[in-house]
Every structure is written in structure tokens, then in C-alpha cells.
Length: 103
Image 1: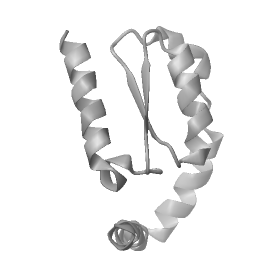
Image 2: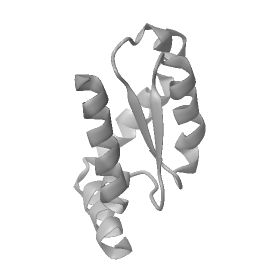
Image 3: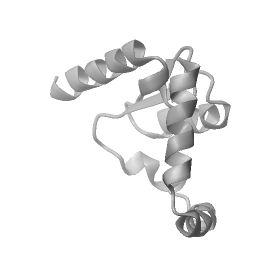
Image 4: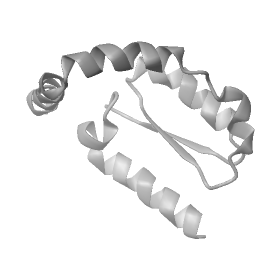
């Protein structure tokens, strides 16, 4: 439930080294994007996104559009951690991906 989820988020943040966190953020933002190379991906790809993860819905659609054969799965009732927030649909998506990859 929400208490467990937010407790995990809080614990992860509290465990972070403040200097590392302060250094990593700007580096991630400054990192050159790879959007122009997505078409080079040629392995089975499943893009999993929580339906409530507003910041990642559009990027997940871009991945689906640009990676040949990619399958996008939107997990209902989940945001940034669908594997925790709604594990059964997430697990189904992973199983479907593995079945396709082994196909």
C-alpha cells in the first residue's frame, strides 16, 4: 500500500549520500540523449510504464515508436515503481516479454 511504498522511497532517499545526489542530478540532465539511435536496437524490447507516471508516458511512447518491434505496456494503478505498486500486471508484462524473446 501507499505507506509501504512511500516508506521505501523515504528510506532510499535518506540512505543516499547528499554529495553524490547533488553531483549526479546535474550530470544526468547534461547527458547527451540517445533518441537518434533508438532505431539501432534490434533485440526484443518491452517498454513498461506506470499509467500514473506522467513524466514518463510521452518518453515511453517515443521508445515504442522508435524501437523496431517494441511493445509498450502501461501498468494501471501504478506510477514510477509499477513492480511494487501493482506487481501482478507488471509480472505479466515481464512474462509476456520473456515468452516473446524466447519465441
